[in-house]
Length: 65
Image (cartoon, rainbow, N blue to C red; front, side, top):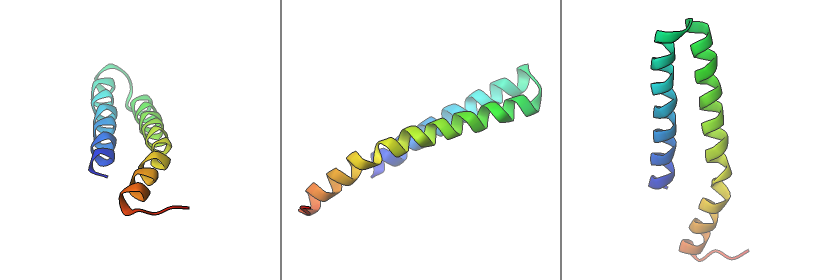
């Protein structure tokens, strides 16, 4: 679980870094839209890893379906 949280935090920090850089280069509303898109993509990518994480939990807890 800690690895999942770390990965999520890192991906969101990348979005924040991109946002800070974009604020300097373009208007703020475009930077916000880009950040929202980045955050959405990061969340979607991390959601895709949840079934694997659930599988690891089940194995470690000895749960069979």
